[in-house]
Image (tube, rainbow, N blue to C red; front, side, top):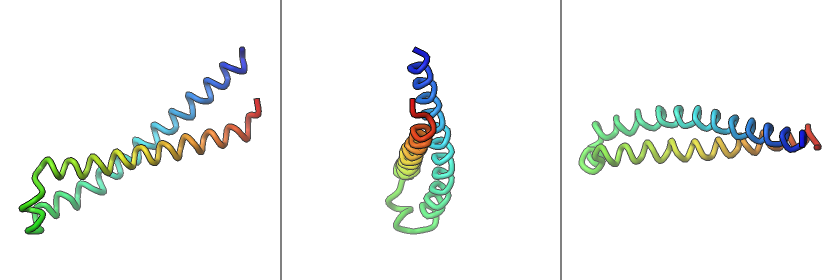
Length: 89
């Protein structure tokens, strides 16, 4: 039974690492995307005419969500791979 509890604790730790890494990536992606999106929507004539506030928010949130899921998935797989080599239970 201790082995099962240990495996559950390792899985929880792996998922937590993924959440933290994904959140950091989402924050960075939001900043990196929001600045050029808002700037282009104010300065570029085509963007000013076609990108309203909803479109700008959709662009930023799509990039942030994609960054979160990609980085979280990679972090979980990295932690699981590390734990599978270290803990052959």
